[in-house]
Image 1 (cartoon, rainbow, N blue to C red):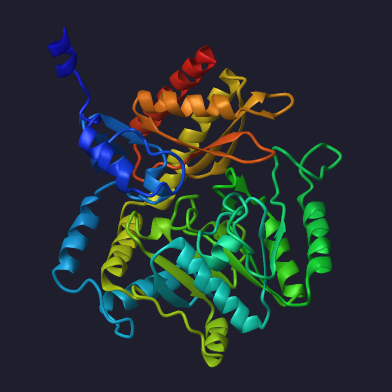
Image 2 (image 1 turned 90 degrees about the vertical axis):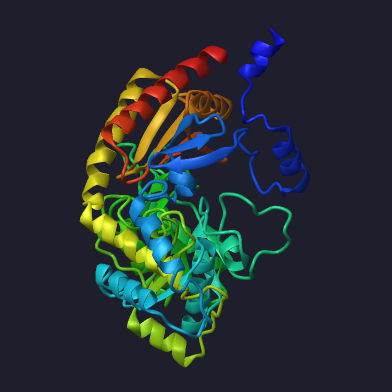
Length: 444
Protein backbone atom coordinates (compact mmCIF):
# COMPACT_ATOMS: atom_id res chain seq x y z
CA UNK A 1 0.00 0.00 0.00
CA UNK A 2 2.86 2.36 0.85
CA UNK A 3 4.47 1.70 -2.52
CA UNK A 4 1.14 2.32 -4.28
CA UNK A 5 0.73 5.63 -2.44
CA UNK A 6 4.26 6.65 -3.36
CA UNK A 7 3.62 5.93 -7.03
CA UNK A 8 0.82 8.51 -6.98
CA UNK A 9 2.77 11.11 -5.00
CA UNK A 10 2.77 14.51 -6.65
CA UNK A 11 6.00 15.81 -8.13
CA UNK A 12 4.93 19.19 -6.77
CA UNK A 13 5.77 17.85 -3.31
CA UNK A 14 9.51 18.24 -3.86
CA UNK A 15 11.01 18.56 -0.35
CA UNK A 16 14.30 20.09 -1.54
CA UNK A 17 12.51 22.68 -3.69
CA UNK A 18 10.17 23.84 -0.93
CA UNK A 19 12.90 23.77 1.70
CA UNK A 20 15.02 26.10 -0.46
CA UNK A 21 12.01 28.31 -1.28
CA UNK A 22 11.01 28.62 2.38
CA UNK A 23 14.58 29.31 3.44
CA UNK A 24 15.66 31.79 0.79
CA UNK A 25 12.66 33.57 -0.77
CA UNK A 26 11.32 36.80 0.65
CA UNK A 27 7.54 36.62 1.15
CA UNK A 28 6.41 39.66 -0.80
CA UNK A 29 2.64 39.25 -0.82
CA UNK A 30 -0.01 36.51 -0.56
CA UNK A 31 1.11 32.95 0.02
CA UNK A 32 2.71 31.13 -2.90
CA UNK A 33 0.66 28.48 -4.72
CA UNK A 34 1.67 24.97 -3.66
CA UNK A 35 2.60 23.92 -7.18
CA UNK A 36 5.84 24.05 -9.16
CA UNK A 37 5.27 25.51 -12.61
CA UNK A 38 7.49 23.78 -15.15
CA UNK A 39 6.23 25.25 -18.41
CA UNK A 40 3.44 27.25 -20.00
CA UNK A 41 1.79 27.40 -23.40
CA UNK A 42 -1.15 29.39 -24.69
CA UNK A 43 -3.84 29.76 -22.03
CA UNK A 44 -2.36 27.10 -19.75
CA UNK A 45 0.46 26.66 -17.28
CA UNK A 46 1.68 23.16 -16.42
CA UNK A 47 2.84 22.00 -13.02
CA UNK A 48 5.41 19.37 -12.08
CA UNK A 49 2.84 16.60 -12.69
CA UNK A 50 2.24 18.08 -16.16
CA UNK A 51 -1.27 19.02 -15.05
CA UNK A 52 -2.77 21.73 -17.29
CA UNK A 53 -4.03 24.76 -15.32
CA UNK A 54 -6.19 27.26 -17.20
CA UNK A 55 -4.70 30.71 -16.61
CA UNK A 56 -7.66 33.09 -16.32
CA UNK A 57 -5.50 36.05 -15.30
CA UNK A 58 -2.94 35.71 -18.13
CA UNK A 59 -0.01 35.60 -15.72
CA UNK A 60 0.12 38.86 -13.77
CA UNK A 61 -2.56 40.26 -16.14
CA UNK A 62 0.25 40.57 -18.67
CA UNK A 63 0.48 37.57 -21.02
CA UNK A 64 -1.71 39.28 -23.63
CA UNK A 65 -0.88 36.73 -26.35
CA UNK A 66 -0.85 33.76 -24.01
CA UNK A 67 2.27 31.99 -22.84
CA UNK A 68 5.28 31.25 -25.08
CA UNK A 69 3.63 32.68 -28.18
CA UNK A 70 5.72 31.49 -31.15
CA UNK A 71 6.12 34.99 -32.62
CA UNK A 72 7.43 36.28 -29.28
CA UNK A 73 9.81 33.34 -28.93
CA UNK A 74 11.17 33.98 -32.45
CA UNK A 75 11.66 37.68 -31.74
CA UNK A 76 13.45 37.04 -28.44
CA UNK A 77 15.82 34.54 -30.04
CA UNK A 78 16.53 36.84 -32.99
CA UNK A 79 17.08 39.96 -30.90
CA UNK A 80 19.21 38.19 -28.29
CA UNK A 81 21.51 37.12 -31.11
CA UNK A 82 22.02 40.73 -32.21
CA UNK A 83 21.70 43.21 -29.32
CA UNK A 84 19.64 43.00 -26.13
CA UNK A 85 20.92 45.86 -23.94
CA UNK A 86 22.83 49.08 -24.50
CA UNK A 87 24.22 52.10 -22.71
CA UNK A 88 21.14 54.20 -21.96
CA UNK A 89 22.23 57.03 -24.27
CA UNK A 90 22.43 54.75 -27.31
CA UNK A 91 19.53 54.07 -29.66
CA UNK A 92 18.61 51.03 -31.73
CA UNK A 93 16.08 50.41 -34.49
CA UNK A 94 13.53 48.46 -32.37
CA UNK A 95 13.26 51.38 -29.93
CA UNK A 96 12.55 53.97 -32.62
CA UNK A 97 10.20 51.61 -34.45
CA UNK A 98 8.14 50.87 -31.34
CA UNK A 99 7.91 54.55 -30.42
CA UNK A 100 6.76 55.36 -33.96
CA UNK A 101 4.16 52.59 -33.95
CA UNK A 102 2.75 53.61 -30.56
CA UNK A 103 2.52 57.26 -31.56
CA UNK A 104 0.55 56.31 -34.66
CA UNK A 105 -1.92 54.34 -32.52
CA UNK A 106 -2.51 57.23 -30.09
CA UNK A 107 -2.68 60.52 -32.02
CA UNK A 108 -1.72 63.44 -29.82
CA UNK A 109 0.63 61.33 -27.72
CA UNK A 110 3.60 61.65 -30.02
CA UNK A 111 6.55 61.31 -27.62
CA UNK A 112 7.46 57.97 -26.08
CA UNK A 113 9.89 56.81 -23.41
CA UNK A 114 10.43 53.05 -23.09
CA UNK A 115 11.02 51.62 -19.62
CA UNK A 116 10.43 48.32 -17.81
CA UNK A 117 7.61 48.11 -15.24
CA UNK A 118 4.29 49.81 -14.61
CA UNK A 119 5.55 51.36 -11.41
CA UNK A 120 8.57 52.77 -13.21
CA UNK A 121 6.43 54.27 -15.98
CA UNK A 122 4.14 55.89 -13.41
CA UNK A 123 7.17 57.27 -11.55
CA UNK A 124 8.34 58.88 -14.79
CA UNK A 125 4.88 60.24 -15.59
CA UNK A 126 4.42 61.77 -12.14
CA UNK A 127 7.94 63.21 -12.19
CA UNK A 128 7.29 64.76 -15.61
CA UNK A 129 3.94 66.22 -14.49
CA UNK A 130 5.51 67.83 -11.43
CA UNK A 131 8.30 69.36 -13.48
CA UNK A 132 6.03 70.69 -16.23
CA UNK A 133 3.34 72.15 -13.94
CA UNK A 134 5.59 73.30 -11.13
CA UNK A 135 3.22 71.63 -8.66
CA UNK A 136 3.76 68.61 -6.47
CA UNK A 137 0.28 67.46 -5.44
CA UNK A 138 -0.90 64.21 -7.05
CA UNK A 139 -4.52 63.07 -6.83
CA UNK A 140 -5.59 59.44 -7.26
CA UNK A 141 -8.54 57.17 -6.56
CA UNK A 142 -9.05 55.54 -3.17
CA UNK A 143 -9.11 52.11 -4.85
CA UNK A 144 -6.08 52.68 -7.07
CA UNK A 145 -2.97 50.62 -7.76
CA UNK A 146 -0.10 52.33 -9.59
CA UNK A 147 2.95 50.49 -8.25
CA UNK A 148 5.13 49.84 -5.24
CA UNK A 149 7.87 52.43 -5.76
CA UNK A 150 8.07 55.95 -4.31
CA UNK A 151 5.58 58.27 -5.95
CA UNK A 152 3.68 55.36 -7.53
CA UNK A 153 3.18 53.75 -4.12
CA UNK A 154 2.08 57.09 -2.68
CA UNK A 155 -0.64 57.20 -5.36
CA UNK A 156 -1.69 53.61 -4.57
CA UNK A 157 -4.57 53.32 -2.11
CA UNK A 158 -6.04 49.83 -2.56
CA UNK A 159 -3.30 48.22 -0.43
CA UNK A 160 0.15 48.59 1.07
CA UNK A 161 -0.03 51.95 2.85
CA UNK A 162 0.53 50.97 6.48
CA UNK A 163 3.92 50.61 8.11
CA UNK A 164 6.15 52.33 5.57
CA UNK A 165 6.34 55.82 6.97
CA UNK A 166 5.14 59.05 5.36
CA UNK A 167 3.81 59.04 1.83
CA UNK A 168 5.10 61.57 -0.68
CA UNK A 169 4.04 65.08 0.30
CA UNK A 170 0.98 66.23 -1.62
CA UNK A 171 -0.66 62.80 -2.02
CA UNK A 172 -4.42 63.38 -2.24
CA UNK A 173 -7.30 60.98 -2.87
CA UNK A 174 -10.93 60.81 -3.99
CA UNK A 175 -13.37 57.84 -4.15
CA UNK A 176 -13.74 55.98 -7.42
CA UNK A 177 -17.24 55.69 -8.86
CA UNK A 178 -18.87 52.34 -8.12
CA UNK A 179 -22.15 51.63 -9.91
CA UNK A 180 -22.80 48.55 -7.74
CA UNK A 181 -22.22 50.40 -4.47
CA UNK A 182 -23.00 54.05 -5.30
CA UNK A 183 -22.19 56.78 -2.76
CA UNK A 184 -24.32 59.38 -4.57
CA UNK A 185 -27.60 58.29 -6.19
CA UNK A 186 -29.91 59.61 -8.84
CA UNK A 187 -33.66 59.46 -8.11
CA UNK A 188 -33.82 56.07 -9.86
CA UNK A 189 -31.11 54.68 -7.57
CA UNK A 190 -28.34 54.70 -10.18
CA UNK A 191 -24.90 56.10 -9.49
CA UNK A 192 -24.74 59.92 -9.64
CA UNK A 193 -21.07 60.03 -10.52
CA UNK A 194 -21.13 63.70 -11.48
CA UNK A 195 -22.31 64.75 -8.01
CA UNK A 196 -19.70 62.46 -6.49
CA UNK A 197 -16.95 63.95 -8.66
CA UNK A 198 -18.04 67.52 -7.84
CA UNK A 199 -18.07 66.72 -4.13
CA UNK A 200 -14.67 65.04 -4.32
CA UNK A 201 -13.01 67.99 -6.04
CA UNK A 202 -14.53 70.42 -3.57
CA UNK A 203 -12.63 68.49 -0.92
CA UNK A 204 -9.48 68.44 -3.07
CA UNK A 205 -9.65 72.21 -3.43
CA UNK A 206 -9.91 72.56 0.35
CA UNK A 207 -6.94 70.27 0.94
CA UNK A 208 -4.70 71.64 -1.81
CA UNK A 209 -1.97 74.13 -1.01
CA UNK A 210 -2.30 75.52 -4.52
CA UNK A 211 0.26 73.13 -6.00
CA UNK A 212 -1.85 70.59 -7.89
CA UNK A 213 0.21 68.80 -10.55
CA UNK A 214 -1.76 65.82 -11.84
CA UNK A 215 -4.53 63.29 -11.45
CA UNK A 216 -3.50 59.69 -12.12
CA UNK A 217 -6.22 57.17 -12.94
CA UNK A 218 -6.86 53.73 -14.38
CA UNK A 219 -9.78 53.70 -16.88
CA UNK A 220 -10.82 50.46 -15.19
CA UNK A 221 -9.47 50.06 -11.66
CA UNK A 222 -8.28 46.46 -11.62
CA UNK A 223 -6.88 45.89 -8.13
CA UNK A 224 -9.68 48.21 -7.03
CA UNK A 225 -12.20 45.53 -7.93
CA UNK A 226 -12.72 46.06 -11.70
CA UNK A 227 -14.37 49.45 -11.26
CA UNK A 228 -15.05 50.94 -14.67
CA UNK A 229 -15.17 54.70 -15.05
CA UNK A 230 -18.64 55.35 -16.52
CA UNK A 231 -19.03 56.91 -19.94
CA UNK A 232 -18.63 60.67 -19.55
CA UNK A 233 -16.52 60.45 -16.40
CA UNK A 234 -13.15 60.85 -18.14
CA UNK A 235 -14.32 63.97 -19.96
CA UNK A 236 -15.57 65.48 -16.72
CA UNK A 237 -12.34 64.53 -14.95
CA UNK A 238 -10.24 66.07 -17.72
CA UNK A 239 -12.24 69.29 -17.37
CA UNK A 240 -11.63 69.35 -13.60
CA UNK A 241 -7.90 68.97 -14.28
CA UNK A 242 -7.82 71.70 -16.93
CA UNK A 243 -9.63 74.12 -14.64
CA UNK A 244 -6.87 73.68 -12.07
CA UNK A 245 -3.85 73.56 -14.36
CA UNK A 246 -3.36 69.84 -13.67
CA UNK A 247 -2.31 67.14 -16.11
CA UNK A 248 -4.36 63.97 -16.54
CA UNK A 249 -2.28 60.78 -16.41
CA UNK A 250 -3.99 57.56 -17.49
CA UNK A 251 -2.42 54.31 -16.32
CA UNK A 252 -3.35 51.74 -18.97
CA UNK A 253 -1.17 48.94 -17.63
CA UNK A 254 -4.01 46.42 -17.84
CA UNK A 255 -6.44 48.14 -20.20
CA UNK A 256 -3.99 49.00 -22.99
CA UNK A 257 -3.21 47.16 -26.24
CA UNK A 258 -6.66 45.87 -27.02
CA UNK A 259 -7.87 44.17 -23.85
CA UNK A 260 -11.04 46.27 -23.48
CA UNK A 261 -12.05 46.14 -27.15
CA UNK A 262 -10.24 49.37 -27.99
CA UNK A 263 -6.50 49.67 -28.55
CA UNK A 264 -6.47 51.95 -25.49
CA UNK A 265 -9.42 52.18 -23.12
CA UNK A 266 -9.56 55.98 -23.22
CA UNK A 267 -10.47 55.84 -26.90
CA UNK A 268 -14.00 54.73 -26.06
CA UNK A 269 -14.51 58.09 -24.37
CA UNK A 270 -12.77 60.23 -26.98
CA UNK A 271 -10.67 61.85 -24.26
CA UNK A 272 -6.91 61.96 -24.82
CA UNK A 273 -4.89 62.24 -21.60
CA UNK A 274 -1.90 64.51 -21.19
CA UNK A 275 0.25 61.49 -20.33
CA UNK A 276 -0.46 57.78 -20.74
CA UNK A 277 1.50 54.93 -19.24
CA UNK A 278 1.59 51.40 -20.64
CA UNK A 279 3.18 48.27 -19.20
CA UNK A 280 2.00 44.68 -18.59
CA UNK A 281 0.13 44.07 -21.88
CA UNK A 282 2.68 45.93 -24.03
CA UNK A 283 5.39 43.36 -23.33
CA UNK A 284 2.97 40.40 -23.34
CA UNK A 285 4.71 39.05 -20.22
CA UNK A 286 8.17 40.54 -20.69
CA UNK A 287 9.25 43.66 -18.75
CA UNK A 288 8.34 46.55 -21.04
CA UNK A 289 6.62 49.83 -20.25
CA UNK A 290 6.07 53.14 -21.99
CA UNK A 291 5.31 56.74 -21.08
CA UNK A 292 3.52 58.62 -23.85
CA UNK A 293 2.82 62.33 -23.94
CA UNK A 294 2.25 65.24 -26.28
CA UNK A 295 5.06 67.08 -28.06
CA UNK A 296 4.11 70.18 -26.07
CA UNK A 297 4.42 68.53 -22.66
CA UNK A 298 7.65 66.78 -23.66
CA UNK A 299 9.14 70.06 -24.89
CA UNK A 300 8.40 71.79 -21.60
CA UNK A 301 9.86 68.86 -19.68
CA UNK A 302 12.99 68.91 -21.83
CA UNK A 303 13.45 72.67 -21.41
CA UNK A 304 13.25 72.24 -17.64
CA UNK A 305 15.82 69.46 -17.59
CA UNK A 306 13.65 66.34 -17.31
CA UNK A 307 15.76 63.50 -15.92
CA UNK A 308 14.62 59.90 -15.79
CA UNK A 309 17.69 57.90 -16.66
CA UNK A 310 17.47 54.19 -15.81
CA UNK A 311 19.56 51.10 -16.47
CA UNK A 312 17.12 49.58 -18.93
CA UNK A 313 15.60 52.65 -20.58
CA UNK A 314 15.36 52.10 -24.37
CA UNK A 315 16.64 48.52 -24.25
CA UNK A 316 16.45 46.85 -27.70
CA UNK A 317 15.23 43.39 -26.62
CA UNK A 318 11.95 44.36 -24.92
CA UNK A 319 11.35 47.03 -27.58
CA UNK A 320 11.57 44.38 -30.30
CA UNK A 321 9.08 42.28 -28.36
CA UNK A 322 6.74 45.27 -28.15
CA UNK A 323 6.84 45.68 -31.93
CA UNK A 324 5.96 42.00 -32.32
CA UNK A 325 3.07 42.34 -29.88
CA UNK A 326 1.60 45.16 -31.97
CA UNK A 327 2.17 43.13 -35.14
CA UNK A 328 0.33 40.08 -33.79
CA UNK A 329 -2.54 42.12 -32.32
CA UNK A 330 -3.09 43.79 -35.72
CA UNK A 331 -2.51 40.69 -37.86
CA UNK A 332 -4.81 38.44 -35.86
CA UNK A 333 -7.55 41.00 -35.22
CA UNK A 334 -7.19 40.65 -31.46
CA UNK A 335 -8.81 43.98 -30.57
CA UNK A 336 -11.99 42.84 -32.30
CA UNK A 337 -11.58 39.39 -30.80
CA UNK A 338 -11.48 40.91 -27.32
CA UNK A 339 -14.99 42.19 -27.96
CA UNK A 340 -16.34 38.90 -29.28
CA UNK A 341 -14.66 36.67 -26.71
CA UNK A 342 -15.39 39.20 -23.97
CA UNK A 343 -19.10 39.14 -24.80
CA UNK A 344 -19.11 35.36 -24.64
CA UNK A 345 -17.34 35.39 -21.29
CA UNK A 346 -19.56 38.13 -19.86
CA UNK A 347 -22.74 36.35 -20.94
CA UNK A 348 -21.47 33.23 -19.20
CA UNK A 349 -20.71 35.15 -16.01
CA UNK A 350 -24.15 36.78 -16.11
CA UNK A 351 -25.71 33.33 -16.38
CA UNK A 352 -23.77 32.35 -13.24
CA UNK A 353 -25.19 35.45 -11.55
CA UNK A 354 -28.70 34.19 -12.35
CA UNK A 355 -27.81 30.76 -11.02
CA UNK A 356 -25.93 31.62 -7.83
CA UNK A 357 -27.09 34.14 -5.20
CA UNK A 358 -23.49 34.72 -4.10
CA UNK A 359 -22.64 36.41 -7.41
CA UNK A 360 -23.55 40.00 -6.62
CA UNK A 361 -22.24 41.80 -9.69
CA UNK A 362 -20.58 41.25 -13.06
CA UNK A 363 -18.77 44.22 -14.59
CA UNK A 364 -15.98 45.38 -16.87
CA UNK A 365 -15.58 45.27 -20.64
CA UNK A 366 -13.77 43.28 -23.26
CA UNK A 367 -11.53 40.67 -21.68
CA UNK A 368 -11.12 42.53 -18.38
CA UNK A 369 -14.08 41.49 -16.27
CA UNK A 370 -14.95 41.31 -12.60
CA UNK A 371 -17.25 39.03 -10.64
CA UNK A 372 -18.08 40.23 -7.12
CA UNK A 373 -18.86 37.57 -4.53
CA UNK A 374 -21.18 38.58 -1.68
CA UNK A 375 -22.52 36.79 1.38
CA UNK A 376 -25.96 38.35 0.87
CA UNK A 377 -27.14 39.78 -2.44
CA UNK A 378 -29.69 42.10 -0.82
CA UNK A 379 -27.36 43.70 1.73
CA UNK A 380 -24.30 43.26 -0.50
CA UNK A 381 -22.35 42.06 2.54
CA UNK A 382 -18.82 40.99 1.50
CA UNK A 383 -18.24 37.30 0.85
CA UNK A 384 -14.49 37.15 1.44
CA UNK A 385 -14.37 33.65 2.91
CA UNK A 386 -16.62 32.19 0.24
CA UNK A 387 -14.56 33.89 -2.47
CA UNK A 388 -11.36 32.39 -1.05
CA UNK A 389 -12.94 28.92 -1.06
CA UNK A 390 -14.08 29.36 -4.67
CA UNK A 391 -10.54 30.29 -5.67
CA UNK A 392 -9.15 27.20 -3.93
CA UNK A 393 -11.74 24.93 -5.52
CA UNK A 394 -10.96 26.37 -8.94
CA UNK A 395 -7.27 25.59 -8.55
CA UNK A 396 -8.11 22.02 -7.52
CA UNK A 397 -10.13 21.73 -10.73
CA UNK A 398 -7.37 23.16 -12.90
CA UNK A 399 -7.98 26.91 -13.15
CA UNK A 400 -5.99 29.81 -11.74
CA UNK A 401 -8.04 32.83 -10.65
CA UNK A 402 -7.27 35.94 -8.64
CA UNK A 403 -9.52 37.59 -6.07
CA UNK A 404 -9.06 41.02 -4.50
CA UNK A 405 -10.51 41.94 -1.12
CA UNK A 406 -11.17 45.60 -0.37
CA UNK A 407 -12.88 47.40 2.51
CA UNK A 408 -16.50 48.17 1.72
CA UNK A 409 -16.65 45.66 -1.14
CA UNK A 410 -17.08 41.96 -1.66
CA UNK A 411 -14.37 39.65 -2.91
CA UNK A 412 -13.92 40.46 -6.60
CA UNK A 413 -12.49 37.97 -9.08
CA UNK A 414 -10.39 39.70 -11.72
CA UNK A 415 -10.91 37.70 -14.91
CA UNK A 416 -8.51 38.55 -17.72
CA UNK A 417 -7.63 35.68 -20.05
CA UNK A 418 -5.27 36.21 -22.96
CA UNK A 419 -6.66 37.86 -26.09
CA UNK A 420 -5.84 34.59 -27.86
CA UNK A 421 -8.25 32.61 -25.64
CA UNK A 422 -10.56 30.27 -27.55
CA UNK A 423 -14.30 29.77 -27.19
CA UNK A 424 -13.63 26.28 -25.82
CA UNK A 425 -11.26 27.67 -23.17
CA UNK A 426 -13.79 30.30 -22.12
CA UNK A 427 -16.47 27.62 -21.81
CA UNK A 428 -14.09 25.42 -19.82
CA UNK A 429 -13.35 28.29 -17.46
CA UNK A 430 -17.05 28.98 -16.94
CA UNK A 431 -17.71 25.29 -16.24
CA UNK A 432 -14.88 25.14 -13.70
CA UNK A 433 -16.09 28.35 -12.05
CA UNK A 434 -19.64 26.99 -11.74
CA UNK A 435 -18.41 23.73 -10.23
CA UNK A 436 -16.12 25.63 -7.87
CA UNK A 437 -18.94 27.86 -6.62
CA UNK A 438 -21.12 24.81 -5.97
CA UNK A 439 -18.35 23.02 -4.10
CA UNK A 440 -17.42 26.12 -2.07
CA UNK A 441 -21.03 26.66 -1.02
CA UNK A 442 -21.38 23.05 0.11
CA UNK A 443 -18.09 23.26 2.04
CA UNK A 444 -19.30 26.41 3.80
